[in-house]
Length: 373
Image 1: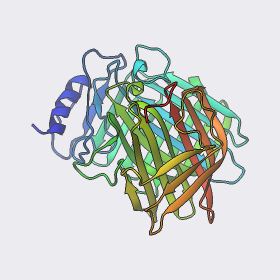
Image 2 (image 1 turned 90 degrees about the vertical axis):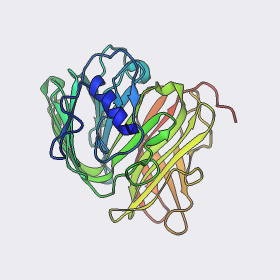
Image 3 (image 1 turned 30 degrees about the horizontal axis):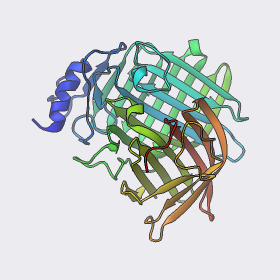
Image 4 (image 1 turned 180 degrees about the horizontal axis):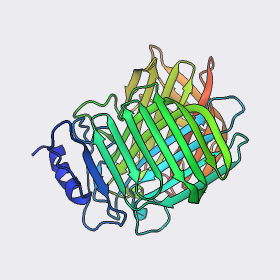
């Protein structure tokens, strides 16, 4: 039995899979993820297969105390002077595995946050009664049961989030029309390609950039804006703090470019990177080779530890992109959320010198001291 087939057997047990993985191509793979933390050991898949699960199906099962997985979405306004943004995170994560979640025996929370056009922040969260995820080719849907919230893809590049949660004061939709192809840490999603972003940390990026429209009500106030949208998925069957020291991640749109960056350190001090540049809905450059991208904070306090102050910006150097390399600078950072000293999320400007655009980014710094050199 192949590596992925073996994983599917584990998934069938851990997720209460309600339809055979060997059903015909016209059938959907349906995964029911229970709300409570599950006992036993968890198995994760880190090798891409288009035939079973694809880019957005569940990748780890069962959800034990060592397991995290999430589907992340964001939109940042591209209109000058408009500070609107939206973030939605749909988790199947045990809190002991991910340090930013509150203690709970349940694994299917949803966290929403954003800003009104004037920059005033808002946030809301709820716990779903489990989750149901259906995958059929490029179409996929995720329903977080009894929450009024779901996401779906009608094609590889078109996503919809639906929110009908009057108890939270939030109703409406967010649409994503992708303008940059999906990718994995090292390049395009091809069968057999690795999905490892870090050792024992998986990542797929279904929507690196999209024309997105946010249209909903938050506590009776309209939140309506257009902007750059993004969607990815992360997962692991070991807790985040057991293998990650720090990371810088972000995405942006500037001039003709859609870019996604990742630059992190594991607990051994080994650097892991991913660079992505797209133009005209085509991948111009993608690599996970060390040296293909370097992301550093301004001021240059690197590597970061828990006590390191938040930066005022970042430099991003992709030396082999687009026949001569690309250099970007992220500045004018606005702190959007920092639930602890371990994490911070920002919006900012993205510049090539010639072009100006927008960026959305985050940093993790999980250790009190730097890793060994």
